[in-house]
Length: 146
Image (cartoon, rainbow, N blue to C red):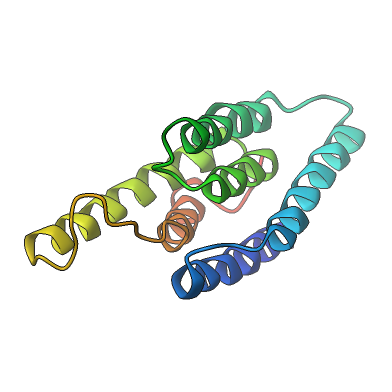
């Protein structure tokens, strides 16, 4: 069930990112609340804190949010999405998702540059690549989260 909720949430965000290039805080807030609730529920069920989830959220997500604030080259919403995925899925899924998303985004960006459809600082929506990376991570790491 968790995988379906995450995937639908990311589908909505990806479509919104493509269309508007800006994500509503309400949609990000709902996802963040779901991620924190799922993390707390996991602690209550298992009686332990998942360091995999913390590493996934803190390691990758906070890094992206920090890059957004420091450089402005990354959207903070991308970092929030990675934090939510990290809390709910753990570092293995986040690492696989980010690697595939970055690979796909770089190939897409290179194509835009080669065919002169964009310049060096042209912004592209990253959430569609995160969604593709998420699906890849599910196939690679399996559907079992944590």
